[in-house]
Image 1 (cartoon, helix red, strand yellow):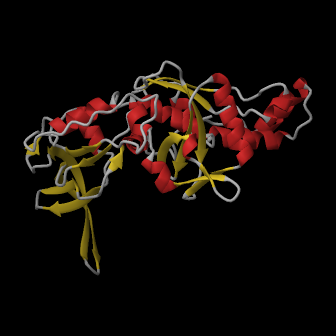
Image 2: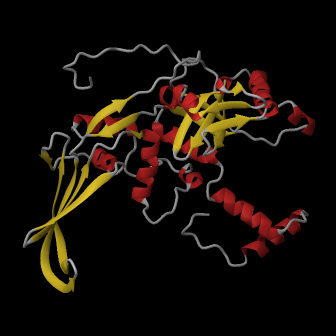
Image 3: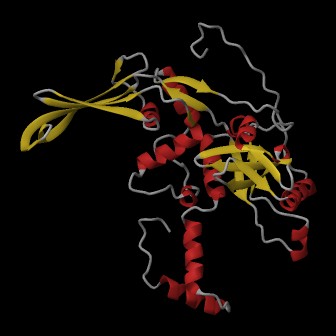
Length: 343
């Protein structure tokens, strides 16, 4: 149920009636709370699936049914969360992905847990990967990089980032909006509505009309012919706001500063928040049912290329893992001449 949907006030009673019809003796309020918790996106695999779908290199991804039988099989096998196939793979078989969300800088599995996951992967002869969400950052790495410590198998955030496969498999990149690039709005002052005196001077309220919208690229050139993809990409960046006034106009400037880099998968959340500002969080399960995850950017890679060509994006970073898995084709790095536009 989406946040703006109205739930019936007697929802727990309706659930209780259904449970009674099915022959289950369970507290309806407990079931309703569990359903609500599922709906608000606690299963991180929904978010990871949406990220992979949007990045553009995923051919197929779906959940695996974990209601395995016989019950005794659980002592040896654990079915991972997802099965995925990427167009970037060199092998024909799909990959198995176990999804975890943890805010500590170390991910830890018990020996029994990782062994049961690996046993299943060996049974179906598929590579086993771990998708780890650390705050808003997604990392994808081979399970074999988890090393046994005193008791459990662990991996640090730093080690996981060094073996991150989200770029070479799913198409994730990092980028930077050029310093000085931004959007500029001009408001014509039509009528003074109110004036209030305060310690700093006065505050005026005006009836205004937007009479000009323009952009500046990373070279500081004023632009009005900017593609919709580039405009959407600008909204994913933290822009500084500057306001100035003339007797006839108020001007708002939203300009990029040197604010580091942004990952493509994090830009997805920014775009969704821009498209639905009144929603507290993306409804990942609902988004997976749509043809396009976002309304404004159908292909992030195409949008990034356009924004670079139009001189709004200044850098694009492709991250490679320290160890290239056998299911990823050998990656040949090409050194570009210094006068190349992407050098």
